[in-house]
Each structure stands twice: as structure tokens, then as C-alpha cells.
Amino acid sequence: MTNELSPQYANELPMVVAKNVHKSFGHNEVLKGIDMEVPRGSVVSLLGASGSGKSTFLRCINSLEKIDGGRIWIDGELVGYKEKNGKLHDMTEAEITKQRIRTGMVFQQFNLFAHMTVLENIIEAPINVLGRTRKEAITRARELLERVGLASHHGHYPMQLSGGQQQRVAIARALAMDPEIMLFDEPTSALDPELVGEVLDVMRGLADSGMTMIVVTHEIGFAREVCDQVAFLHDGQVVEQGKPVDVIGNPQHERTQSFLSKVL
Amino acid sequence: MSTPNPRIDDLEKAAHGTGDIHSVPVRHPGQAVAGALIVVALGALIWSVITNDNIRWEIVFENLTGATILRGLGTTLLLTAIAMLIGLTLGVLLAIARLSKNRVMQTVSSGYIWLFRGTPLLVQLLLWFNLALFFPRLGFGELSVDTNVIITAFGAAILGLGLNEGAYMAEIVRGGIQSVNRGQIEAAAALGMRQRHVTWRIVLPQAMRVIIPPIGNNLITMLKMTSLVSVIAVPDLLNRAQAISAKNFYVFEMLIVATVWYLLMTTIFTIIQMQLEKRFDRGFSTTSPRVGKRLAKNLRPGRVTNTELLQVVQEKSKE
Image 1 (cartoon, rainbow over the protein chains, first blue to last red):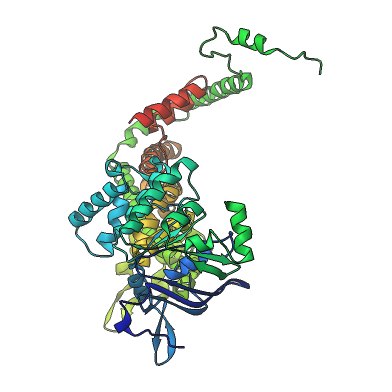
Image 2 (cartoon, each protein chain N blue to C red; image 1 turned 180 degrees about the horizontal axis):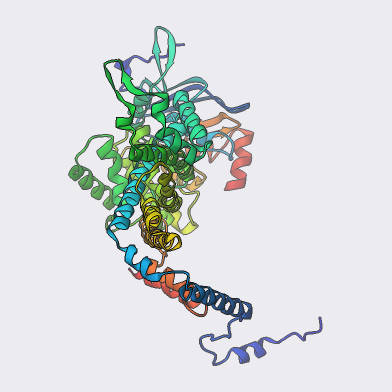
């Protein structure tokens, strides 16, 4: 098995490639050999019951969790490890952070910095990680706030916003780092039903702009309309992957069928 | 059931024409009685102190703002400030070390806290003061100085108080850091922030909210603990008060002088602490009443009703 993919094929390479990914927490094996390819500019949603490993897999892509087996590549670059003379070495903190800048992540609980205003939340990392000037960062932040429909809320603290507004700020904050991929971990699961739409609208816009996205979600409607591919996970493995029309419209695997019959 | 079922018409009739509710609040006669008893007892005590012929109040007033006492007060405040600064700095560093993934730092931090929390402050002060008996000279060979040049009484006091405080502060800061939601750290990491950046910019500012109240307590404790240094002949407030009473023999009067100053200082610190708490509550709450209001609340006759609380909340949200 080759670990380093040739860079000359980088343009045709899928943005994310996962091969036989394993991850255990103690004795509990959560990922049991995940294989997946996420083409550049595509939107892939991960479906599955809770505990199926979809969130864990997402967190492995930006090294929030460290994988125990298999390989993940982003744009042909091995995630979390580097290979020297046929041996794997753990990445240093600096190397991991450098890699993380390429992916943006949106969490179920928003996780906006509670002690900072909306604007401060967005400009913090661009200034201190990317080394942008404050002025540049603010200009970009205002553009992004405009884009998520919250231009007038820059001075608010997260506590003063609704869940939907907080999540849209969180998306703007992730976009401010100019990521190549966006990871969404159940972005609408903590929202009141009437607020789900505004977040999905922003995500739909983002998908239309050509961003590569991996979305863990329970919103089957969103998966069907917006996603290019759907992967169904069960018990730490991908049991079915394909176009939404096929996976959602005509599921082949028994697990997928029973899951969809419950949520549709 | 013995109560007859009311009909919906009856309820509508009963509700007809009623406006805002002005109900009679539940009375608490016990509180009033206890309050009255305490006021009487306190009054009697104060009266007995004021009218006590054994206390020469003019000596108290004379010395309260005397140059010697004020210099002592200055020393006490200076000691408190420097020791607190050392304690706070050490505490933050020790807490970060304790929570780091670096096992060497973890062990050093735990060992430090074990040593300095495990021995009495008075003993530590005496050890620092007498360091010259153990290490007559500090430094290496040619580059050494007489220990007593560095470890003066004041130096020993600073070291003793500051290093001891560091150990306690470390535990406070650690608690504060651990109270910050893990999601905050993950979000920062996902944005590509380095560990150090996450600690100083994301975690510590939020930990402050939890850390400030106990730091305020420690500051007040520190102010009072500085009185221990009078045993190693540092001219602090208590030491000066005792020095005066050694000459004029008004022991109790001079102790009252010291007490009045200590009490005044702790009161001021308490007010500052409340202001700070409010400042660091930013982004977490919309309803912390002003310090003055909070103090007044407990002194006002009657109780804070829900309507009053609601008013405070509404005022706040308007701001």
C-alpha cells in the first residue's frame, strides 16, 4: 500500500481520501475501516444513527481525533502523521495546526468564544494564526457577516444571539480562514425547528459557490437536495455510498432501509 | 373529591374585570424577630465598647492617622500587592504547567503545590528569614553575595507570602481553567490556533469569571496574613501598632487602631472585587445588578420581590 500519493495527480485527486480508517476509544472500536472519497468541490453528507461513527470520522479529518489505523489524505497530504523512510511519525503541534488551517469546522454546539463579540470571534484566528492585519481581517469579517445575513450583529455577544444566528456566525468564523474544505458536525441538531432553515440556506449558498463540504446531518431533505453524494454509516463502517437519489431514494442495504424508514 | 367541579363559566366570571395581580406576599415574622434581636444585641455591644472607661478613645483617634501607623499601613499594602502579584503570576504558570501534557512540568507543579501548601506560612516565613543560617552565601564561588544582603526582613516576607500564595492560587486558576467548556478549546484548535494561544486568548479570559471571586477572597486573606510578618520584624501595620503600645502601654487601643485599618481595607477590597466580577461576567449574563444595589438590597427593610427583580432585569436588557 502506498502512503504518499504522487503530487502530479493532485488536480485530479479527490480532496479527501480515507482508506481503512480505524479509531478506538479505549476498548470501544468506533471506526472499523472507513473508506471514502470526497471529490473536489463536492458536497458529501454522512448519514447514520447516533453512535455509527460519523462525527468521530469527521473529527479525524482535522486531527481533533487521532486515527489508530488506515490513512486519511487531504489533497494528497497525509493527515496527522508524516512518513520518513517508510516509518510513520506523529506530527508536531505546529504541523497539525498548519494542516488544520486547510479545513474549517462547524460544531453542533456552535462553540463561539463566549467572551468575544461576533466580530472578535471572526477576526481572532485570521489575525493571530494567518498573520493578517486587523484592518484586513475586519473587512473580510464584514463581508462574511453580510454573506450569512448578520451584518448588523457584529457587536453582539454570542449569548445575545439565537441559536441559528450563532451557527451562522460560526460558519462565517470558519470561512474567515479561507479553508479548502468545510466540515459540518450536525450543524442544525441543536436548533429550534424554525431556525434550521436559515442555517441550511447559508450552507446551500456555500455549496453553490463550489466549496468542498462534508456534512454530518439528520436533515434528509438537505442531503437529498444539496449533496452530490451520501454515505450511510453503520457500526463504524460505510455500508452504502452513492448519489442521494440512489441511497435515499432506493437504498440497497437493509440497515439503510430501516434507518430511512424511521427518519423519513 | 369533596370540592365541587367548577364550571368554565364560573372561572370566566371570576376572571372578568380583574387586572394586574396585587397579592399579599407570604410574611416571614421569624426574620423580623431575629433581625430585631440582633440589632438590640449589636447595639448593646457597641454601646459597651464606646462607653467603656478602660478604653482611651482619644489615644485611638490620635494614632489612627499618625505618621507611624500610616507608614505601617503603607508597608502592609505594599507587601499585600507584591505578594499577590507574585502569587498570581506563579499561580497561573503553575496551573498551566499542572494541566499541560508535559510530564516534567506536571510533576514540578504538583511538587511545588505539595510543599508550599503542606507547611504553615509562619514556618515558611521563619525559614526564609533564617536562610542565612543554612546558606550563608548565595550564588557560585566568586559570584556570590552574603545571604543577608538579599534576604532582608522585607525580602523574606515577600518570598514567604508570595511563594505560599502561588501554591493556593495555582489550585484556583486550575479550577477556573477546567471550568471552561471543552468545545471552546476544540473550536479554537479547529481554527488552527496553537495551544499557547488557546490558553491565553480563549481559556484564561473565560476562566477569569470563575477565578475572580476566590482571588478576591485570597486578596483579603493576604492582607490579613501580612500581619504574620510582624514576628520577623517587618514594620507592617500590626508591628507598628505594637511598637507604639510597647512605649505607651495602651495595648488595646493600638489593637483597635490596627483593626479599624484592616477592616477598612478589606471593605474597600470587597467593593473592588464586586466590580471586577461584574466586568468579567461580560458575555455570560445580562443581569448582574450594580454593586451599590447589591449591598443596599440586604440592608433594605422588606424583601426583594419578583417584580423588583424583573425590573432590574428589564433595566439591564435596555442598556
